[in-house]
Length: 130
Image (cartoon, rainbow, N blue to C red):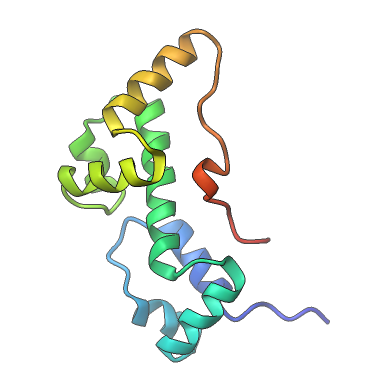
């Protein structure tokens, strides 16, 4: 019998509710674990802290919105739960190594030439095992 990893409920919650205000305590509670122990088990499974994983999930969602929507950068920051445009731009640039506006321009230019810039493991951001 294969047992489910104790942090999978939190991972699934993050995938669906990444735009919501999420705390470590809430995620730990979903898994019936103490917050410190939850953080340790989460890192064992993903190789990342819960906050890092949440940031990466939000940035992936933002990259999709930048590529495939005409939403403003302010709206994308809000919809992904990142908050202000300034913080969104700083966070996006840290993970993707270019500003949201530059990413959108590059994506659209490459798409018009039939090239895709989206990669499932952008900058080392991979998903947890199924």
